[in-house]
Amino acid sequence: ALTLGFNLSAQTLSDPQLWDFVDSVIEETGAPHSGIGFEITETAAVTNFDAAEQFVRKARERRCRVGLDDFGAGMSSFEYLRRFPVDTIKIDGSFIEHITQSRFDREIVLAITSIARSLGCDVVGEKIERQDTLAMLSDMGVAFGQGFLLHQPEPLERIVARATKGATARKAS
Image 1 (cartoon, rainbow, N blue to C red):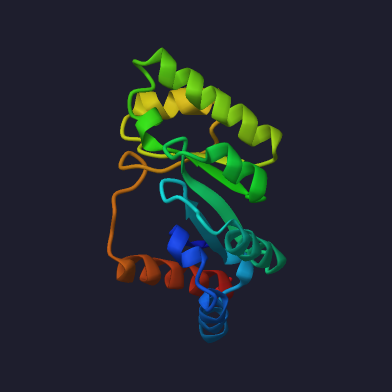
Image 2: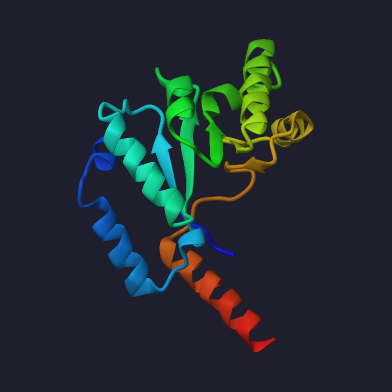
């Protein structure tokens, strides 16, 4: 199933009309809430925690997925974990890209993975560009990945066409 993900800045999280917009898009497209995910960008400082907590609560009520993006790169990672009940933690690529050479980066990734798994969160490794990096992350229990090794960027139109073709094929069978 195709999941549509949106990165949200701290400023966007504070927009009182955000859910009106999201609900109208869902209604227009017929997309299931479970197929929509939001990523709170860890590098953008959240200044209005009440608004952000309210957004996360509404997302969870609608069965949308919520994740922390760029985890470990910002200033308030653990505060975000404490305040936002998220489904996914995406480990920042700065810890991933040299993981095969850097003991420090390996230990950081292991620690984040352990915390995420103990909280019941999926773990995503960003910036996977080499096979040895992918193998090491897999051995560490990082079940999901993102990066050029796994898939090159492509135009939205091509992604939509492939998803539509897949949905049509499933309906026919």
